Image (cartoon, rainbow over all chains, first blue to last red; front, top):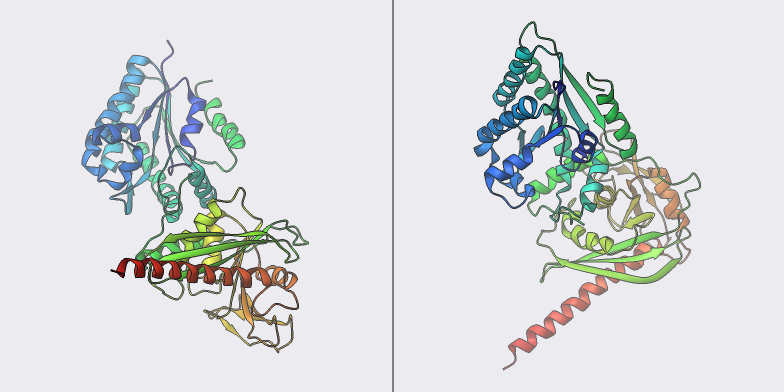
Length: 212
Length: 242
């Protein structure tokens, strides 16, 4: 069984196309922070998370996330893709970073400690998926899987805040790399304005990596 | 399909306008000839007693010929009259009207402002952005901008300029020598010059304060309000009778 050699944190505003792009990584283990939040908040739908105070369960979600990522690397022997939001609405009003810096550092340290013990070259990607606000507005409006009212400014603010905090995720993971360990941490932006083109560009990020 | 949520507090409404106004594009989405197949003129009105907003849509072609029957939508909306915030009072009714259409028109024409607005985001901009559809605003009363009125000669126009720059944000357009001019400003996906060009092309000699399609839609919306209130009054009087 080949040793896993990559993780990817793929984030962006709701509806920007992360989950659709993640279908390209069907051989990877995929962990969704939204699913973890929903589990800990006992909610019927992920849309409800944004109206509540999800920071109350953030610690547990971060702990579960770390455990699932490590299990996938160590026991399943697979690369891991984390499907997340770099920023999310809280209390239905303002935006906050998805996972606080300390949780990102803990995740980074746990993963890179395992990498250091196994001596493989390793790569971590932080990938921001983004698009034009008007494009996101139309997608959310026509998305039949979400039957809620849509506040148009959320499309603008959600994209803006995810853009703002994505680089923070990259910084925290990059800073948690131990010295003298062969780990690349890369930050990438993928614009999802036309899905067909986006899939090709997204796949290329993984075709040229350490794994074929 | 999701429905749009409309803030009902003034401060939240201003934040919504400020957040969305950067999405307005003022480059014309039409071909160079400005031809289009289907336009929709949307007139609006608000019945204060029952807090009900009405929107009436009338189809027209690129020469201003009306087509089909007017369509009406109404919905209860609790938002006060505030200059510069018409969208939050009548927008829900407009969206209900547009959501019921089989397909989006090529152009939306509103009895409201476009970018000639204190926050550069009038009704025509707001709805244009929500549906990413070219839109133009035509009104009787200016809200924002500097201008000289045109001579009273049909089809003459002068520019409306932003208060703090030289940007042309609309035009004052003389439709009839017997009426005050109207104010034309681009909403979304059309330039100020092209908005005037389209409005000029759909204007007929017999039109009064606005091109026929929007004048008719506006009149139809007011008529819908009167009918609605008359029905409500009859129902109320029926309840009062012993």
